[in-house]
Structures are given as C-alpha cells and as structure tokens.
Length: 504
Ligand code: ADP
Image 1 (cartoon, rainbow, N blue to C red):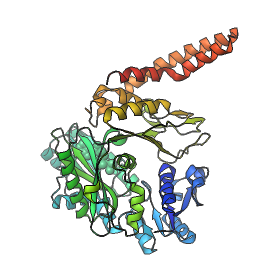
Image 2 (spheres, rainbow, N blue to C red; image 1 turned 135 degrees about the vertical axis):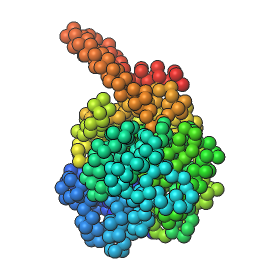
Image 3 (cartoon, rainbow, N blue to C red; image 1 turned 90 degrees about the vertical axis):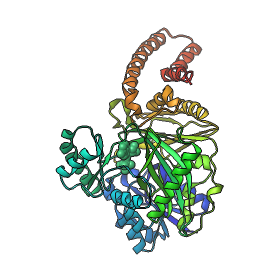
Image 4 (tube, protein in one colour; image 1 turned 120 degrees about the horizontal axis):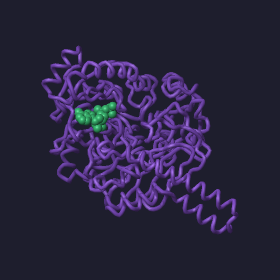
C-alpha cells in the first residue's frame, strides 16, 4: 500500500479522498492556490503546499509544480479527483516518467478515451451501439451539411476532446449550422486547446444513463449498476439517482455488459464510467467513457456498499479486484443533489461569496460531502459545486421524501444556491413518477415558476418585515415575538414543499 498520496485537486473531492486515505492509513499531501489557503481540505491533510496564484493555470493545472511537490514530499501516488488534470494524458505521462503512480488508467488508455471520436470508433468495433454520426473530425461546413442531411435534423455538434457540456451545440435547422459550428469550434479551441468537432444525431427526449465500472490490472472487470443523470441544465448534471426509474433488471444486465465491452476495448483499468443515451424505445447508445471518479459516485457507493475511492487506491497498487460480479447487489435507492453556488433565477450565474450561516442536514440515510464551513469565502475562480447531498431510502418514494426533508433542513446563507431548484424538481409529479427526460427543467418551466414563487415570497418577506417592525415598535411580549420570528424562519418554501409532497 502507498504510504503517502498527493491530492491534485481541491474542494469536496479533496476532502473525500483525504477521508479514504485516512481509513487506509495513508498520509496525505494537499496542494492549494493562494485563494484556497483557508479551505477545509488544506486543514485536513497531513501536509499542504502552496502552488501559486488563483488562476487554474498558475495552480491546479501547473503540472511541473505538482510533480515537483509530489517528489519533494515523498508522495508515491497522485489522486487527481475529477476536473483539472484528471483526464489529461500529458499529466499521466509525466507521472509515469517520474515513477509516480497516477490513480487512474494509464496514459495510453487516457489518450484513447480522451478523444471522444476515437473512443466511438474503438467501441463501435467492439460491437457496442453508438449514436449515428461522424467517423472523422468535421473538415468543412459543406461536409457538416451533407452529414446533417443524411442523419436528419436535429443533430448535435460536439468537441472531440470535450467535457463538462462545453462545445456542445444542438442544431435544429440547416441554416443554423454554420453559426453553430463557428461557436462550437471557438469554444473547443479555448476550452480544450483543440478545435476538432464531430456530429451526432440528436436523440429526442433522451435519458442519460451511465454505468460505473471497476477494473484491476489483471484483466478483471465488474460493473456496479447504472446511474440516471437525466436531470441536467445546459448539458450539465444537477441531480443523479440509482437505480434508474426506467431501467429493469434485464436492461441493467445489457447495459452492464455493453459497458464492460467498451471498457475492455480501450483496455481500461481502475474506476471509470461508461456513459449512454437511452432513447424513448429504451435503445441505448454509447456516448463516452469518463476516466476518473465521477461527482455522483456517492449514489453508487450507497446502494452497493463499495467505497469507490478506496477501491481506486487499492487498484492503483496493483491489487486484484476484491469483488466478483455476483458479489454486487443493489440495496434500495440513492439520490444526489448537486448544491452549486449559482443563481437559478438569473441564468445560473455563479454566486460566490462568504457563507454567513451554515447548517447541514442529517439523520438516517443522509450524507453531505462538502468542504465549506460557516465564515468560509468561496473563491470565484473554480467550479461552483460546493456540496453534494446524497440520500438513501428503501425505495424511490422514501428517497424523494427524505431528500425533500434534507433540503428543507439545509441552511446556507450569504450565497445563492441550487437548493430551491432541487425542491421544485422534487415537487413535480412527473419527477415523482420517474417521467423525466433531458429537457425536464425547460419542459416544466421550472425556472419561470421559481421566479414567480420568488417574487411572491419577496412580497411576503417585505410584509412580514413591516409587521415585525411594527410589532417591535409596540414592544410585544418576548415570547410572542419569538414565535412569530420562528414561523417566518420556517418560511414559505417549506409549506410549498409540503403541499408538493401530498401529490406523491
Ligand atoms: P460532455 O463530455 O461535454 O459532458 P457528452 O457527450 O457527455 O458531453 O454530452 C453531454 C450531455 O448531452 C449528455 O449527458 C446528454 O444528456 C446530452 N447528449 C449527448 N449526446 C446527445 C445526443 N446525441 N442526443 C441527445 N442528447 C445528447
């Protein structure tokens, strides 16, 4: 087993990895940018080293500096978490050159899966269904137009080295194609340093279903069931659950087999995720392999009982898989809500700032992964994810009720978050019945309705404020005043939520 691991990441995932290392008796090395000095993960790690300024290029993407720190601190391995350098084949190569174990697949596999177009080709040759589309990067507008005509509209343009929903453009009409290609190419160049694009047929009303896999370095591989990540905004996941409400045992086995076939074709090792699109007829198509731990891994951990981060570390030492496929069973249901500092009422604008008051929910089956605390100032340079709320229940109805109660308990003041949007999603009858698709939020006009509710609660807040001020002038007995204040604190949202619950 490794004695010391460097964590090349920040935030909640750094905390998550430190916890796994502590259980395994491994010393941890944190790295941080100048604005992350006060972060929880820096305090929790055994050692911590400053990387540089706040820009990712000066800090979490500075490969040379990270390798230097790993060597000088005596770390034998690097856990990359997700994002930053987690899927960068150059960084994996640098680790290999410096004899530091990268906790993830090797650089060759990383190259195969990092190029989504190449991965499509390899996986198709292995017999896994892919979405009809490009075989090669798009070379001209004419070629794109011909392909779009052949596939039939709508189509979706993707960046060959893309991720995080960037570089994606849906095209509904041929005349939109040149503009969409231009914007997607620019976005791909800026975000991924490579302008290569490809086209896929756009699947209508799809579901995003992904399969978690674990593979050792001795050709053993298992899958741990699916995650349904259909609730998204701007092609980015917002809420995930397992098992999927639309996947039965037979489909789960077929998805699992396809995922393992895809992973074998690219010679995958360590933990990874094979992503699929499921159409209305329940046909599934491969979209990509994510060669890292996913944000939403916690739901799989909860129903399978497998600690995926510990498994990653063990597999990186060359250990054989501790489980066989028949050992994996799913216990109940789990759901995760991503809590981002974003304002859903204002086009999801990032809303970093100082946390003035914080209280995490708790109780049976409730897990919070986060690196924030009261008084902590969230820097504006990085991802907006600040907490993950994962809830378990014996069935989906229990999960939804428990998640609703947990969201109501979640107090976070000083910043705007996605909590109200999650509450609104849970209240929707279609969500409760598992009738979801990628356009769920737009289709149910959730943002518009949230705005209306917000305006109503703002009015109530003003009226309540005036009443309170009036009462204060009249100096009512302390007990009555307290009671009124408490009533107000419980708030409008809670009573809305309770009304929503009755619909289940
Ligand atoms: P990224 O790597 O940027 O996350 P993906 O290829 O994984 O991009 O796609 C992001 C999301 O877009 C997916 O989760 C899925 O919901 C949606 N999507 C991808 N391809 C298609 C498609 N061909 N048709 C419909 N939706 C798609």
